[in-house]
Length: 159
Image (cartoon, rainbow, N blue to C red; front, side):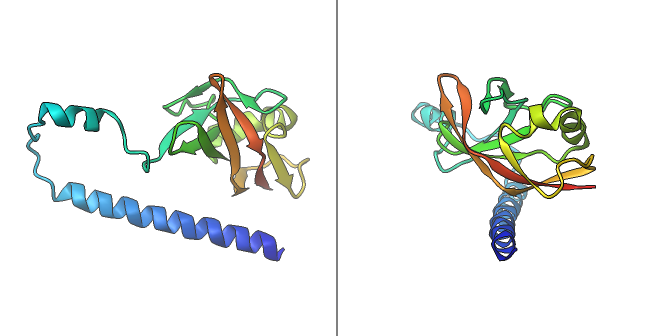
């Protein structure tokens, strides 16, 4: 139980830090004039390639039985997107299960098909959850055009 509390505390601290970063970015953008700046040709390449320290979000559909996400998108698709992956380098990332009503409904169709290949379930997996929380992020890597799970995420069902 202490390990779970520690994991949740660490995750909360990361989320709070990310919220602070996003709030400061919003404030900076609010103070920016609405005029579009002129970009020099030499700066074009810098603008086209995002900095490696920036996170990229990818939405993943149902995994295969061996933990491979073959279908993914840069935009969330209602009823299809079940997981969210964050990556800095475009090759390695961490994923969570989305807690949207659509993702939970899709997962409820078949827990063994949509959740168990890439997640460990804490608590009673036989209940029909109203909410599914990610307790620990999973890890995945881009391999041959698909995202392959390296470490399962840990999720908890709330009924």
